[in-house]
Image 1 (cartoon, helix red, strand yellow):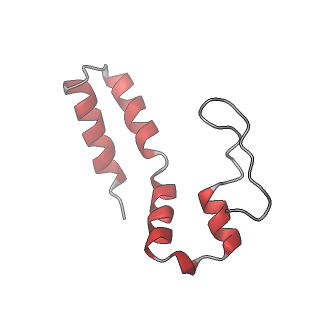
Image 2 (spheres, helix red, strand yellow):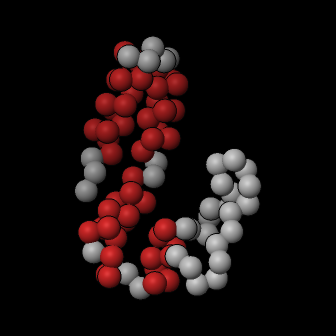
Length: 83
């Protein structure tokens, strides 16, 4: 769905020319902005056809087990049975 190489290269170019980052920092920015593209693809597919996933699959997509805290560092809680 997404051309990750093209996106990564564009981010690197913008990061070096517009943001004046070093090539190493630009590469790091590009990596961190594209390493979740597979998750984004899955989310787009869900948004296009939300009934295609079971409630359990949707729950895992929306709040994966790997999420352990919110941006402010507080523990995330998810009531049982709530997406």
